[in-house]
Length: 301
Image (cartoon, rainbow, N blue to C red; front, side):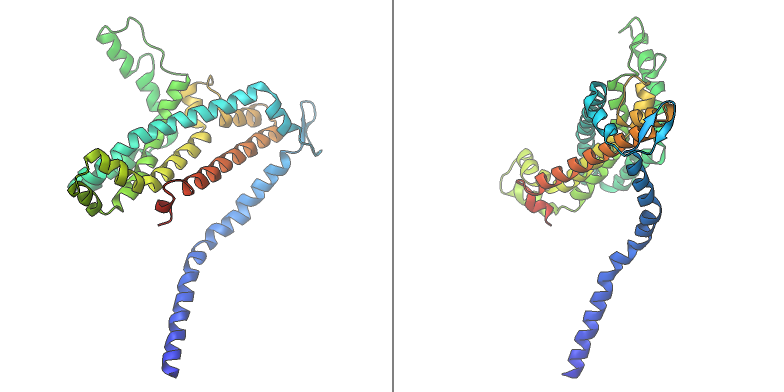
């Protein structure tokens, strides 16, 4: 009996040590966050409650004027609405493009699956600035599209396709499609192919099999990709700045303008934390909605 008890204690000890491994892996990140990021965030949050005067600069007097002025100035609310609209549209297009691509790679890729995945993530190896600049050569007055339209006689003068919301949405969609594709692909590859074979064997059409089996089981990946795409769109700076040409102002470009051009760090900090709260709220609410909805069982496995 003593040997059995000792063996049980040994097994319990090994399980306890294994359970500590995930927490130990988080130690470097936790140290980095607590030593660098958290003090910076705390200082920025405190600074957002200070005053700013054009003749005196930053005045360390506590107030909530920076936060109230953001919501009382119509231009600021317009910028917020533009950010939400552009982010939502670009995320929707990223899903429309990324889901079929992930489906094809998962079920039709065959021996070329690895190569197709490599092609999907290859754009991530290039910086956002370079990819956005590339779109200037495609959509510009002397770009590929306008040259083709002029050559074919479809238009008589170059079409203005840059420095508007459409250009920003195109750029964001191109940048975020890989994130949605990889998220959906992860869920599709974890799916048991026997489920689809059984569905078709029972007489279900391909469309019914997709909507009743494939799509519900891929929702975790869809949700992950959509959240990543939306959050990146909400905080995007380079693409709106380059492809919007300063005419499409979003929250990130507003913060840039306030802090680097106007040197109004308190107000810029307040806008940054408003954006942080909005993004966190949308993430939490959407997560709760999905987990409590019709397909909540899918997210529990």
